[in-house]
Length: 581
Image (cartoon, rainbow, N blue to C red):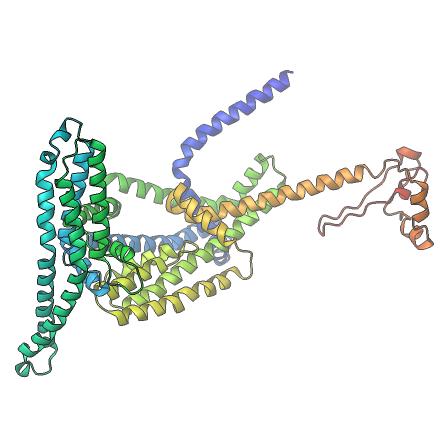
């Protein structure tokens, strides 16, 4: 009893101390884990260095650690710092005016420009205010309902009257712009006849205006009629008045789709109106978006470039821990593994299998994923360079990071860049060439690199790979890109070990029942194969069963069970009969 109590106290102490140990060490998990992965990846290089220095472990470990620092860590840190600096400069150049200019170019390229969108937004706001006012009116206020929204309905009437003049002014300005562009493109500006060109363009603009106005006029009239109905209503019922206000809102929504849509052969009015509305935000919306985007991105980039005290302390401490861990993992790695194996209650062969699997995954899947992302990012960077993109290093680093995510890849970077080239910069040829480069080169180099690095080794299922990366990033941050796949593969290995253990237990139980008395019915005996060949196969060899001279149930047998190929040599019931030799 006292031994049992002592065991319980020991287990409880281990749990408590283990929890404290976890709390102490969790802050150093990332640098220590990175150190372990780097040591495994660069183990072949360490073996080569060890041979060159005459098997002197400490000298070889110091040289290997230095090579890792100067070939991997320092270049990676410099690239990330330069990319963060470019990102900070890029964000610093983002202002509401630059976003408005970019949207204006994009709208013109895509045909989403709406000359009367400012008026449409004002009407939408006023009608929303009318509905809100009527929705909050009390029964006493209904006695003079028009007094609550009299100014708003008149304002909406005036804004509706401004729609057609605004459309006409827009067409006149478009004609002037096209005439100026034609003069600039003319081979001989002195012989350019501006009046003739302007007359032709004006005729085209007038026809477009008439076609559009023919659609707008009845639509505007319907909204005016809904306003008149609201103004002329003297109904002392709140429900009735709110119903009329809802009808006004529905009429305006239909009218807005007509005012913003109707320009696309492939989309209906509602879909095209949605695109147009999204492409024509107000100045207030642009300012809000700009402030939110800068507020989200700037802190991270500033922390990586401005060298704040807290950030630098964490960065330096993590780097020191990683470097020291690498050195001691290289020198004392085998001893550490042996000590952990002695402390672990798991069978030694299972522990070795887990270690072997960790080594394989670190070298194969993780290494292939990282190399593939780097090659894809560099290939995409070549395309960005020839496309004339600024912030080249930042785009390349973002492509590398995107390449680490399965099913995503650098396409989430170069596709928006193609859109930017075509829509914002007006370079459709460069956009098409970059898109072809992204599909043919960037998209295919991934398979070549992975096939070369993996050498036919098993890979994670694509769905598991995607979920492991996304789940690892959401739980552990950027280091989760490496940790996630390793955790999944180690879990697969543990499940395979468990399956083998269960199969072994099943075979053991089956073997235990072999020696039990077996009753055979006469019918079964008649159908049994008792030919000499069958009897000869049931005879046990002396190497399989050794009779110790004891009687019946005391006879001992040795059973050859092969774990290598999964087959088992089990004696037949005849071999287990008492006195059988």
